[in-house]
Image (cartoon, rainbow, N blue to C red; front, side):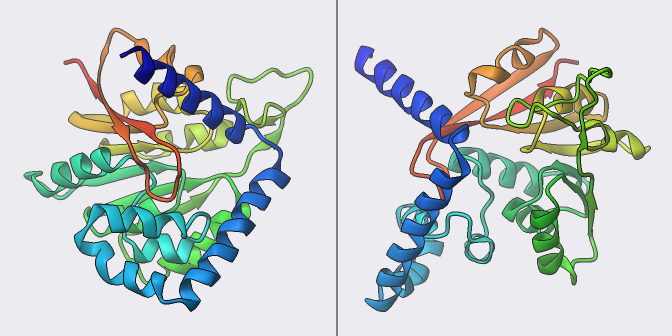
Length: 258
């Protein structure tokens, strides 16, 4: 048990370092993966993995490691960037709903395409302009997806804001966080996988249907524990492998306590 706890702590520390590491370090890691993918493609390994990935989680996971920061590959693998156990849970939840699902998503990505196949209506909010433009190109023919771009503003020194991100502390994400309030409807599923997650959770709880769920990714991070410890929510945590990541992580399913 002690070894498991130490191993988990080491992984979390390494994830934290990578999460806040300089952009050049991340670019170097991605470039290495791209080189490995080219070599693996040349020798036929990628084609072999593509053939077996739909039928084996192990093959799917190995193939996903060559798809890090490659949106085309992740979409082809038909997978969000949550833990595998959480993906299974959400897939079953949507499949067993008694009515067509209405979904809201903070943070667009491969999950946007995955969710659109499983719900009636999806609203997805993205703060990053370049990433938003990429998602738009992949969703042009999807009639049930509404993509909205809500870029941050520069934080005013004399106007403090609660809508700031630890990763980008000098930016104000108010329009991004509050975008969910623009819709009168309630949602069956709300995804929180972008900036300002604690602030997003606070507003998401007010827009969640009675029996709805919130998917809160990377719920193991220390900076999210305070918002996830509220007395009025129920949390189911899924720890494990994540498509496209060499590190284990956690995705939480959050519900209202009615």
